Amino acid sequence: MGDLDESEEIGSHPEPAGRYFVRFGTFFLAMERPRTDLTNLRDSLQKALDDDPRVASVTADPLRVAWSSQSKMYPPSEKIDTFELITGADGVIAPHFPDPLRFRIHVPIKNQPLFRDEADVPSDNYWVVWDGLTVVLGWERGEEERVPPRSGGQIVVEILEQAAISAGARLVVQACSPGCKNLFAHRVLSVVQYPGTDRAIGYVKRGFPVVATHVHVDGGPEELVMRVWEDLSRSSEAFAQYKNVGRRILTPEQRSRALVAELLARDMVEAEAQARNVIWRGGRAIGNGAIGIALVSTDLDRDANS
Image (tube, rainbow, N blue to C red; front, side, top):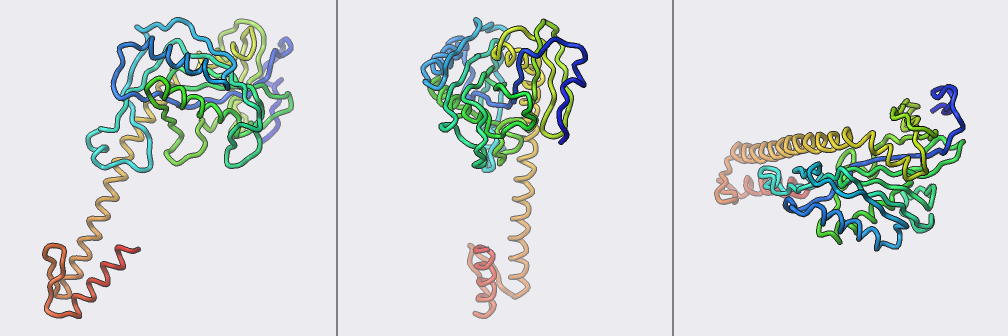
C-alpha cells in the first residue's frame, strides 16, 4: 500500500483540525419480542453505560420514537439447529434508534483486548456512536500513521455486551462471516478533519484496508465521529439487514447440502450391504452369513468414527 498523500484530495484548505482512524461494524441489540417502551430501553442502555467505569461520558438527544424501528434479525452462528433454520425460531428483534447514544471510552492500553495477540492497541480513548444496530468508533492518529492497528476499539464489544445485559437484552456482533474474528468492517476510514460546515464527505480508497476520508465539521472528536455516523447510518442499516437476510438464505442451503450428502452416504452403505446379501432391519444387519455381517459392520464403524 502506497503512502497516503492527503493533499491530493483536499486542494487549498485551512490546516486540519484533527486526524483520526474511524471504523464501523454491525453490533445489534437482540430482544425476544418487540418493545413498546423504546425510550425506556434506550434510557436503560444509557444508564448502564454511564455506570460503567470504562465509559468517561455518555450523551444522547431525546429519542424520536416515531422514527425508531424494530426489525427481525437472525444471530449469525456456525452451529444453528436445523429446526430453528426451518422455523426461524432463533430470530430476534433488533431496535434502531434515530437518535444514537454517544459516549467516550477511557481504558488504559494495557487493559484492552488484543486482536489475534497483536500488541497494537493505539489509544486509551475512543469516541463511539451506537444506534442499536451500527457502531461507529474513532480515535486520534498521528499525521504519519498510515496503517490502522487491528486491535483499535475492540474494547467496545465488552462494554456493549454488559450494557445490553443490564437492559434485559443481549448484543449480537455480525462480522463478515460467522467465524471471522475481525468484528468490525474490514475497511477503516483514515479521516482528516477540517473546520467548516460543508456536509459532503469525500471517500477515496487507498489500498486495502484504508479509505481516505475528508470531513468538514466544527468541534472535536465527538462531533467528528457523529458526523461520520450521520453519513453512514442509512446505508449501514440497510447493509446490516440485507447481509443478515442473505446469510439466512445461504445457511439453509449449506445445511441442506450437508443433509443430502449424509443421506446419500447412508444410502450408499445400505446399497453396499444389499450387494453383500445383508438386509437391514431396525438398524441391525441380518444376512446369510456371519462374514457378510461382520464386513458391513466394520464399514459402518469405520464411517462413524471417521
